[in-house]
Amino acid sequence: MAGAAERIVALAEQLLGVPLPVRVRAWDRSEAGPPDAPVLIVRSRRALRRVLWRPGELGLARAWVAGDLDVEGDLYQALDLLAGLIWERDEQGELTSGTDEAPAFGTGWAGGALSLARDPAARRAAAELLRLAGPGLPPPPPAEEARRRTGLRHTLGRDREAISHHYDVGNDFYALVLGPSMVYSCAYWQPDGTLEEAQRDKIDLICRKLALRPGERLLDVGGGWGSLVLHAAREYGVRAVAVTLSREQAAHGRKRIAEEGLTDRVEIRVQDYREIDDGPYDAVSSVGMAEHVGSARYREYADDLHALLRPGGRLLNHQIARRPLADEEVYAVDPFIDAYVFPDGELAPVGRTVGLLERAGFEVRDVESLREHYALTLRAWVRNLEADFARATRLTTPGRARVWRLYMAASALAFERNRIGVNQVLAVRTPESGASGLPLRTRRWTADAEART
Image (cartoon, rainbow, N blue to C red; front, side):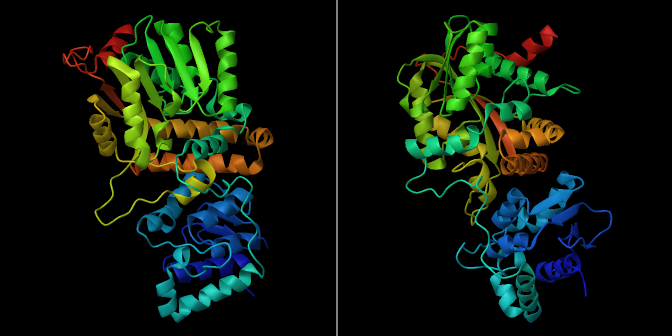
C-alpha cells in the first residue's frame, strides 16, 4: 500500500490539475514528489484537516503556525514554487473557504466547488483526502491568531487591540529580529551595507527630506521604539514627540531617551493620532503606520496631519502600497496577514494615497519608491530570526516565531516580484503665499548626502 506522502501528492495533483512543485514528507516518513525540490513536511493528519476545513491560505497558515506543516530546504524557493497554487489563485478569486463548523474540502485549494461537482475523479480524490485526514473536527486555531473582532473597523478601541496584537509581543523578541536599530520599516541600502547602516541612512534620509532645523517641532506618528525621534533630536537639534499605541514600544523608547539624556527634548506618548491636540508642528513623519489607518479613514488621517502642521510644515509619509486592481476586481485583505500579523491592516495604491493627501490640502513634492530596499530589509530580518530561532521561540512563543518567519519571507518575495511596493511621499502644507520653503532643486537631500561621503 502506498505511503501517506504518495497518496497526498497523487490526490493533490488530481485536485489541482498540475504537478505538485515540492516534495512531500508525511507523518509515516514516506516521501514523494520531485527529488531536488524543497520538502513540505506534513507532520500529522491534523494538517490535512486544517486545510480541508479551511481551504486556501488560512488553513495552510494555521497548519504552519501550529507546527503541523514545515519546510525543509530553501523557504523562499518553496514559497515561490507554491505561490501559483496559493496566493495567485487567491488573487484570481478561485479560492473559497469553509467555516470552522462546516468543512469546505473540495473548494478553493482543491480546485473549486463547481469543478469538483462536474469532475467525478476530483470528487473521489477529495473524498479520499478526507478519509486520509481522519475523523473529527479540526483543532482550534493556534493561540497566535487574532481573536474574533466585532464592530466597525478602525475605531480607537479596535485599533488599539490590533496594534497590541502585533507589537506587544516582547521587546526582546523584536530586538533579536530587528537588531540594535529597533527600526521596523524599510531600510535604505547601499551596496554591501549592513542592516544597521541601512536603517541609519533611512532615518537620516527622512530627516533630510523634512529639512529639519534646530529648534523645530517634529511629530512622529506611529513612532515605534523611538529611533527616528532620537536621531532627529541628537543630529538635527529638534524637539520631538513620538506617538504609539503600543505600551511596550513606549516603555522601551522612554528608556532609550533617558539613557541618551534627551528627556528635555524627546517625548513618547501612548496616544492615537486622532487624539493629538498640541499642534502646530513644523514637520510630521509617518513611517509604516498608515497601513493601519484603513481606506475608510484615510481622508480623516490626511486631514488630521494637515491640521497638525503649521503653514509651510512638511509631511513625510512612508507607506506600503499594493498594485491597482482591475475594474471588476474587489480588494480583499490577505487572510493570513489579517489573522496573524496585522489585524485590520489595509493597503492602497500609491496613486490613491497621493490623491487623498492632495484633497486634504497638501502639495505633494516628491514620491520615491523603495520597493527593492524593503525586500533586502526583510531578508535581513529573516536571517536574524533564523540565526537564533530557538531563542526567538523562548522570547515569545513557537507559533509567533513561525508567524514572523513565514510572513517576512513571503513579504520579501512579494516586494521582489512587484506584487507590493513601498513609497516615501514628501508633502507640504503650502501657505497662501505659495512659498513651500523647500530647496529649489529636486532631490537636494541626495546631493547633500553625496557631498558628505
